[in-house]
Image (tube, rainbow, N blue to C red):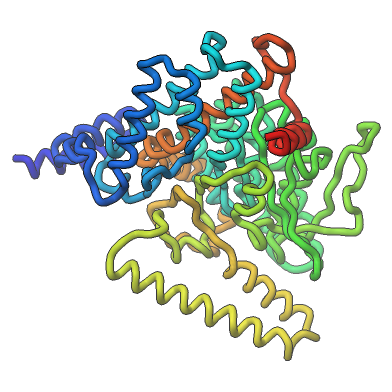
Length: 505
């Protein structure tokens, strides 16, 4: 009977049409399987429960005794996201929904303490002291980024991932995209928050005819420019003609687009409102989507000091961003202090070789990781050895450079959202998708995200709280009172302000 009920619940989980249906079935399954008791029992070798329990009790004592300075000191001493290993992926593999109740209790207590300290009525703590603490905590704790990989027309999976997170109000402020992923990042980052729901409508996602036209023109010669015109039509229909800075002012999202230089000896770029605020968003996405051999390299455009459209780095041309930086983690870390990466990965060249978890246990996983690592190292060594004798052959040398770039990259983050089928055919990366296929990919992205929603919610709760409180305190410091609708601060100015705060502290 128990076995039959477990199978019924598993079927409900697999066939859920909404996140709420999935959640209800997952919680019921945890009750039936004993995972709910596991969550209530804080003891486990998967994390340092004793250290977390001690720290939780100290925070609770400070709150009950109204010791505001003691609370501030305790939080200031060590607020970070992986206390006692509480960020470990293994803590989210035992149950279908959530993790140890102790982890949730500690996260809620820290969040409540931060909310309390930010209130004007806090005794004996000045606004300057609060600002100093919250900026320091924000810098130390870091923040999350949502990353969309290269994808071609598998990009509709990314749309499903974004929809699932958007419905739960879990979209990070920082988003990156490469190739097809750049299209989704730009669509999200060029709209006001209240307009984001429009991008999930079937009529918005239909550009089957343009993709079919690209496929019909897949032959050498001048037809590459025809394919480019089809791609431009897609981009112009769904992305407004604005700069990165203007996109930030609209959405409040810090979007980042990876592009690769078409010329040798040049470096890849990560375009955003910090490093390239006046670059036009459409041209950046076009460059990131230009698969070599399918589309010709493109130039970028920008607005000059008079607001006029002008060429940007006119001597340079750019191609597919996923060739050099599918997931630009190091650059996001430098620019925004990101230290937690949520990855939607649909790159057909990478998927067969990765798993959803970085350190999945088991003999087979260990052997396969070791074998793949050895193959990767030998392949890179062979490519570097071949470069010198054939350096005069520009075409072959470019192919080897591309191989080295692809193999050298990291394709996973802290939380990885992958399609259920890990063997997406690279030959179908430009396949035309009818309405049914588009919605099926979108639904697949949602379903693959649902099991990770609670983990994302818990692991980003403190950083989301800090982001909001820092913005509110900054507005109070600047205006002398809390503004109902504060004007967005340019990421360029914000970064300068953050650096000054770090120096002052």
